[in-house]
Image (cartoon, rainbow, N blue to C red; front, top):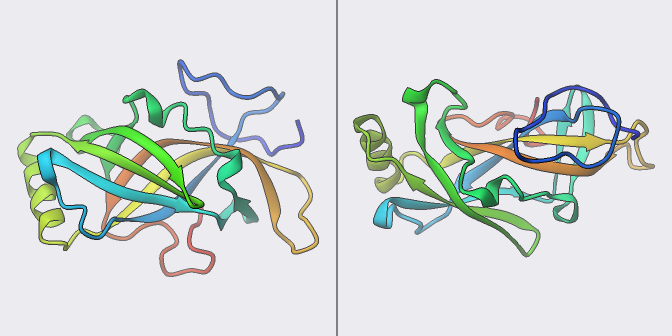
Length: 175
Protein backbone atom coordinates (compact mmCIF):
# COMPACT_ATOMS: atom_id res chain seq x y z
CA UNK A 1 0.00 0.00 0.00
CA UNK A 2 1.33 3.45 -0.81
CA UNK A 3 0.14 5.20 2.36
CA UNK A 4 1.75 6.87 5.33
CA UNK A 5 1.99 4.88 8.56
CA UNK A 6 0.59 6.04 11.91
CA UNK A 7 -2.43 5.08 14.01
CA UNK A 8 -4.02 1.82 15.04
CA UNK A 9 -6.73 -0.70 14.29
CA UNK A 10 -10.28 -0.66 15.60
CA UNK A 11 -11.38 -4.00 17.08
CA UNK A 12 -14.13 -5.61 15.05
CA UNK A 13 -13.65 -3.35 12.03
CA UNK A 14 -11.13 -4.82 9.58
CA UNK A 15 -8.87 -2.44 7.72
CA UNK A 16 -8.65 -2.45 3.94
CA UNK A 17 -5.75 -4.45 2.48
CA UNK A 18 -2.35 -2.87 2.93
CA UNK A 19 0.89 -3.36 4.79
CA UNK A 20 0.71 -0.17 6.84
CA UNK A 21 -1.45 1.36 9.55
CA UNK A 22 -3.64 4.32 8.62
CA UNK A 23 -2.95 7.85 9.82
CA UNK A 24 -5.25 9.77 12.15
CA UNK A 25 -7.06 12.94 11.17
CA UNK A 26 -9.85 15.27 12.22
CA UNK A 27 -12.51 17.26 10.44
CA UNK A 28 -14.54 20.24 11.59
CA UNK A 29 -18.33 20.04 11.50
CA UNK A 30 -21.37 21.58 13.10
CA UNK A 31 -24.74 20.84 14.66
CA UNK A 32 -27.36 21.06 11.95
CA UNK A 33 -29.62 24.12 12.09
CA UNK A 34 -33.02 23.21 13.48
CA UNK A 35 -31.75 19.80 14.62
CA UNK A 36 -32.67 20.46 18.23
CA UNK A 37 -32.46 17.63 20.73
CA UNK A 38 -35.79 15.97 20.17
CA UNK A 39 -36.04 12.62 21.92
CA UNK A 40 -32.46 13.10 23.09
CA UNK A 41 -31.03 13.03 19.56
CA UNK A 42 -29.08 15.55 17.55
CA UNK A 43 -28.21 15.63 13.85
CA UNK A 44 -24.63 16.52 12.99
CA UNK A 45 -22.93 17.49 9.76
CA UNK A 46 -19.53 15.81 10.18
CA UNK A 47 -17.67 16.40 6.94
CA UNK A 48 -17.90 17.45 3.36
CA UNK A 49 -15.49 16.90 0.52
CA UNK A 50 -12.65 19.06 1.77
CA UNK A 51 -8.95 19.41 2.30
CA UNK A 52 -7.45 18.52 5.67
CA UNK A 53 -3.86 18.55 6.88
CA UNK A 54 -2.40 15.30 8.22
CA UNK A 55 1.18 15.34 9.49
CA UNK A 56 1.87 18.49 7.41
CA UNK A 57 0.45 16.86 4.24
CA UNK A 58 -2.50 18.48 2.44
CA UNK A 59 -5.02 15.70 1.78
CA UNK A 60 -8.43 15.68 0.10
CA UNK A 61 -11.34 13.74 1.59
CA UNK A 62 -13.94 12.48 -0.85
CA UNK A 63 -17.12 10.70 0.15
CA UNK A 64 -16.46 7.87 -2.34
CA UNK A 65 -13.55 6.69 -0.16
CA UNK A 66 -15.46 6.97 3.15
CA UNK A 67 -15.92 3.74 5.13
CA UNK A 68 -18.97 4.09 7.41
CA UNK A 69 -18.66 0.58 8.84
CA UNK A 70 -17.86 1.73 12.39
CA UNK A 71 -20.30 4.67 12.51
CA UNK A 72 -23.03 2.30 11.29
CA UNK A 73 -22.57 -0.17 14.17
CA UNK A 74 -24.18 2.02 16.84
CA UNK A 75 -20.96 1.68 18.89
CA UNK A 76 -19.08 4.82 17.81
CA UNK A 77 -18.89 7.26 20.72
CA UNK A 78 -20.10 10.84 20.89
CA UNK A 79 -17.54 12.53 23.14
CA UNK A 80 -17.10 15.96 24.67
CA UNK A 81 -13.99 17.75 23.35
CA UNK A 82 -12.38 14.47 22.09
CA UNK A 83 -11.82 13.43 25.73
CA UNK A 84 -11.90 9.67 26.21
CA UNK A 85 -12.52 9.13 29.95
CA UNK A 86 -16.03 7.77 30.53
CA UNK A 87 -17.24 10.98 32.21
CA UNK A 88 -16.83 12.70 28.81
CA UNK A 89 -19.01 10.19 26.98
CA UNK A 90 -21.96 12.26 25.73
CA UNK A 91 -23.75 9.55 23.75
CA UNK A 92 -23.48 7.25 20.77
CA UNK A 93 -23.76 7.63 17.01
CA UNK A 94 -26.92 5.77 15.96
CA UNK A 95 -26.73 6.23 12.21
CA UNK A 96 -24.62 7.89 9.56
CA UNK A 97 -25.13 8.58 5.88
CA UNK A 98 -23.74 10.50 2.95
CA UNK A 99 -25.93 12.91 1.02
CA UNK A 100 -24.86 15.38 -1.69
CA UNK A 101 -21.17 15.04 -0.84
CA UNK A 102 -21.66 15.57 2.91
CA UNK A 103 -21.44 13.13 5.83
CA UNK A 104 -24.23 13.34 8.41
CA UNK A 105 -24.89 11.45 11.65
CA UNK A 106 -27.59 11.20 14.28
CA UNK A 107 -26.33 10.93 17.84
CA UNK A 108 -28.35 9.76 20.84
CA UNK A 109 -27.43 11.79 23.91
CA UNK A 110 -26.82 10.11 27.28
CA UNK A 111 -29.10 10.88 30.23
CA UNK A 112 -26.29 11.78 32.64
CA UNK A 113 -26.12 15.06 34.62
CA UNK A 114 -22.98 16.12 32.71
CA UNK A 115 -24.76 15.63 29.37
CA UNK A 116 -27.87 17.47 30.65
CA UNK A 117 -25.78 20.67 30.60
CA UNK A 118 -24.54 19.82 27.09
CA UNK A 119 -28.14 19.20 25.99
CA UNK A 120 -29.13 22.63 27.34
CA UNK A 121 -26.29 24.29 25.40
CA UNK A 122 -27.43 22.48 22.24
CA UNK A 123 -31.07 23.52 22.79
CA UNK A 124 -30.03 27.14 23.30
CA UNK A 125 -27.89 26.86 20.14
CA UNK A 126 -24.83 28.00 22.09
CA UNK A 127 -22.93 24.77 21.45
CA UNK A 128 -22.82 24.53 17.64
CA UNK A 129 -19.58 22.76 16.72
CA UNK A 130 -18.49 19.19 16.37
CA UNK A 131 -15.37 17.43 15.21
CA UNK A 132 -14.74 13.91 13.98
CA UNK A 133 -11.72 11.70 14.54
CA UNK A 134 -10.88 9.47 11.60
CA UNK A 135 -8.35 6.98 10.32
CA UNK A 136 -7.15 7.45 6.76
CA UNK A 137 -4.73 6.26 4.13
CA UNK A 138 -3.21 8.63 1.64
CA UNK A 139 -0.67 8.39 -1.15
CA UNK A 140 3.00 9.28 -0.96
CA UNK A 141 2.94 11.83 -3.77
CA UNK A 142 0.69 14.89 -4.14
CA UNK A 143 -1.28 15.47 -7.32
CA UNK A 144 -0.60 18.36 -9.70
CA UNK A 145 -2.62 20.67 -7.42
CA UNK A 146 -0.31 19.88 -4.46
CA UNK A 147 -3.03 17.89 -2.68
CA UNK A 148 -2.41 14.24 -1.81
CA UNK A 149 -5.39 11.98 -2.57
CA UNK A 150 -6.94 9.94 0.25
CA UNK A 151 -7.58 6.35 -0.82
CA UNK A 152 -9.63 5.33 2.25
CA UNK A 153 -10.95 6.92 5.46
CA UNK A 154 -13.05 5.72 8.41
CA UNK A 155 -14.57 7.91 11.15
CA UNK A 156 -14.12 6.37 14.62
CA UNK A 157 -15.45 9.03 17.01
CA UNK A 158 -17.44 12.25 16.98
CA UNK A 159 -17.06 15.05 19.53
CA UNK A 160 -19.15 18.03 20.49
CA UNK A 161 -16.66 20.83 21.02
CA UNK A 162 -16.36 24.54 21.64
CA UNK A 163 -13.47 25.08 19.23
CA UNK A 164 -13.00 22.41 16.56
CA UNK A 165 -9.54 21.45 15.34
CA UNK A 166 -8.21 23.86 12.74
CA UNK A 167 -11.25 26.13 12.90
CA UNK A 168 -9.20 29.27 12.54
CA UNK A 169 -6.95 27.88 9.81
CA UNK A 170 -7.32 27.23 6.13
CA UNK A 171 -7.81 24.37 5.23
CA UNK A 172 -10.41 23.80 7.95
CA UNK A 173 -8.76 20.97 9.94
CA UNK A 174 -5.34 20.06 11.28
CA UNK A 175 -3.89 16.94 12.88
